[in-house]
Amino acid sequence: MDIAGLEREALDALEKTKDIAALDAWHATYLGRKSRLNVFMRSIGELPLAEKKTVAPAAQATKRLLEEAYARREKYIAGSNEAAAFDVTMPAIRPVYGRLHPLTLVERSIRTIFSSMNFSVVEGPELETEKYNFDSLNIPKNHPARDMQDTLWVSTDKGTLMRTHTSPMQVRHMEKHLPPFQIIVPGRVFRNEATDASHEINFYQFEGLMVGEGISLANLKGVITGFCERFFERAVDVRFRPSYFPFTEPSVEIDIRMENGKWLEVMGGGMVHPAVLEGVGYDPAKISGFAFGGGLDRFAMIKYGITDIRLFYGADLRFNNQF
Ligand code: FA5
Image (cartoon, rainbow, N blue to C red; front, side):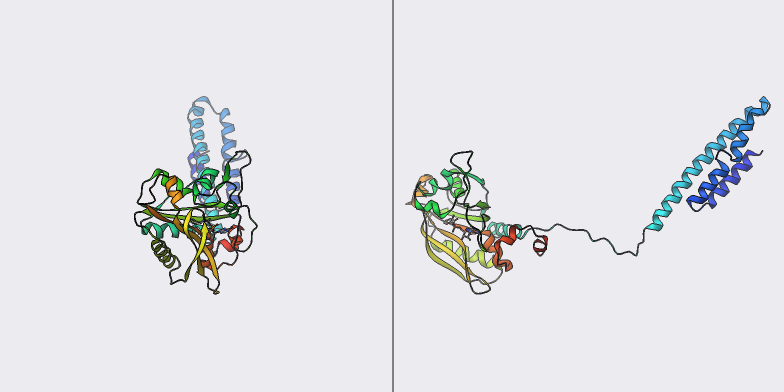
């Protein structure tokens, strides 16, 4: 038998196979147990020794070559089937993109606006001590003012609580810095109170504090009004009402008129109480400051026209994906 002729014939036939069935048939003919090549190889043993020595290696070489060619062809056919299965005219699968939560968007906007007004952004601990959350803010033990903010105490650690407001950072910052400075403190706060459309047990505040010489309530009004106009990108009605906080004197509550005409309380604020200034070693005769604590969720509600604060925490993607 002519090995070289068989090899050429097999390679020609291989190139004509277009699918797996044809390839299988080719394998049976040229490489399988009953293939001509195999039958021939089995008969080599009967050849005279001299012939055997040349024919056997040639037959082996052909077998290897055909096996390699077969493997390549198999890959090629599998690949071209994959290409056929991929229909480029099919509509694409739309990737699901993550989105930023509306409270994150509002927090970022607050950071940006106050930074541009030369405020530094600092953060404080959510797990606070009674000392910073109440005592150092001129809220004595057993004073009814403590009841203004229902507290979640940490039962395993006496004197430890989940901060009820961001105001403890006023004192923490003043203890470590000398005026003048101005900061904002965005952060999460916790209160043990009943929820309704404008109250959550877990919500966000942003504290503001500006301390220096000659700081007055007029500065607070100017900063808050300027901030609101930048934040809402329109002229807004801001109302300052007299109020009471133990750590400010005088104290104000700040409301904003919503689109439905109703006023919503968004902030407490005032002039830092002399007792608080003295507590951190400042001289109240020389140094004064204003502070405010804004309800971040409330600002988000007004900005996006949301009438129930609880929607922010419902983890409903139909809500979250609208922002
Ligand atoms: C305070 O928390 C004071 N620390 C604010 C302050 C800071 C006064 C600095 C003076 C100087 P108040 O409890 O009123 O105050 O809360 C401040 C704001 O947080 C409110 O105006 C309101 O916008 C928001 N807020 C209060 N309670 C809730 C609640 N349960 N859910 C959502 N927002 C709330």
